[in-house]
Length: 221
Image (tube, rainbow, N blue to C red):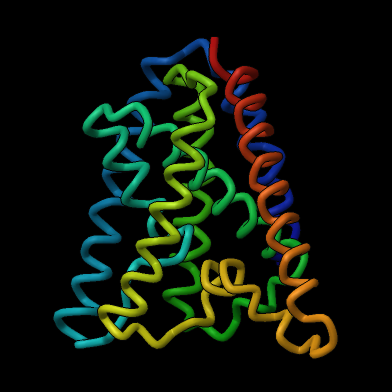
């Protein structure tokens, strides 16, 4: 049986290669993109409806990948340029990091039930696909403002949900990255480490935006 590592390694390489080869067939790629984002939007609305209304479970879309489904889909469907660009940015890195995590440490996801595990694999892969399709079909202006403003809004949204709706699950990456909670084990000079950490986060975010704009220029013709 082919291992998950092999499958995701192939996906990581083959998906961008295939889309790049087909980049001149924009009409066909646009149809595929719309099919994917409509599916993702409908599925995620149904999923959160089930959790919140039927299960009465206190679960909200706050994680980077969770909100990227909605931002990318709505940005494309309603032709909102800044939202569309930021949505593709968020979807690309959400999908990419999930694929990389599945290659490096696939066992870290095994705490989920079988259904949610397989759906997470499928949906994150589709995020990765849809972001590259979006870069290929739509012109990316290369401005940094949508990304910076978008990250501020997404992080702000996560903390509004946490504080106003009493959302207690702070194990998500968005909270850990924003608060630097993993640094609290360092008792000595904690605040100095925290300052350095935030500087590194800002530099990393800038490099991600820069990398994404380079990728956008490569894919769009």
